[in-house]
Length: 134
Ligand SMILES: [Zn+2]
Image (cartoon, rainbow, N blue to C red; front, top):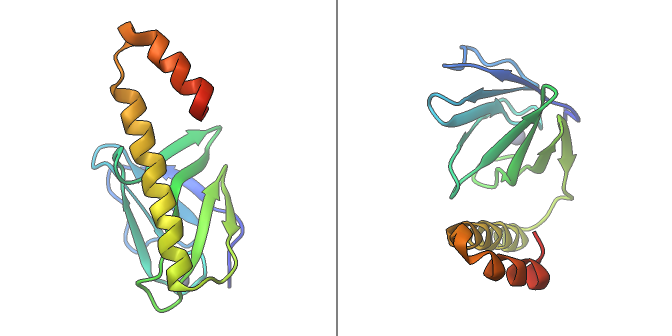
């Protein structure tokens, strides 16, 4: 059964077995893990780093960026985790999935590039923000 919500637990190590509907976040090991929200039982491991996934926990609700695309798994699930909710994308083809990943990757590169601009170059940041937003 597809979930539409996921709770969040901050852990050192994820327990075994994992419970469905829980995103386990280990800051220590820089990884988040959960069972695929479609209910297929597959474990989804998302390394946390600027180049991979970023997790944000606010008021006990997690958001994960970029999206989860389990197209290497049988279910081919694709969803976002936003403020503790599962936002399902429509069933899409592998090609479309790759485009989504490409876009996510560009987003991340864009962010990294912006973060590399030193604070002393505030005017570059302002121009950047003007053209590209935050
Ligand atoms: Zn699944």
